[in-house]
Length: 290
Image (cartoon, rainbow, N blue to C red):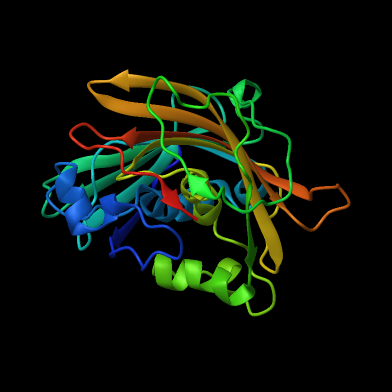
């Protein structure tokens, strides 16, 4: 059996938010949700894992690969993270991914999942809306509960132009990594952590939330994502439920880039995003105006 690929990193604090912030990533918001301090964004934990996945599976994973990961425990800045990617005994072409943390929170598993090349077995289950141009947020971003959640309705897509300098900072500043694929001077690749992280700003582009907690992502890469283009994400809520007084929602999304002959660009990824949109012990805030 092939030896596992192992990397170690020190978790850094989240960079200042560029959009509407998630209170779970600052001290007060994390305290309100019952945590001992500001949580490192789960999608950044995945960003470090994605580096190791690419080392194991090769550059092709960035364009035709898939990953299914679950965030198991909180991660705090300053902790050491050990990322291990190894061939799985569950089937040919499947790799197991695990991120273990040690530090103020003790020794624990913070992320685990699987990854591979080609089309994921679960891809046909995803039901994102058709790609569409970006739209402004609604005049008032509404809230909802489990009885009023707009299941099945396409959300207003969110578009952002990713400059080459911004793409480089995703790697060097957000993740504290040096990788020429994501820092080359002309048009670097956009780090896969950015694509995975599009669903959270999309939901806050459409609705008002308090603290939210990223739980799981299933991501199918569909094309090469390079800087110097508009990247648009659209989605719809496909499920919602209560578990132990946490309110969960599941969204199916599609990420597109503007460089293509297609009307709304080239498809870069499909994503199923699982999140707690109202953690136990918190309340939904009042709707805000855009």
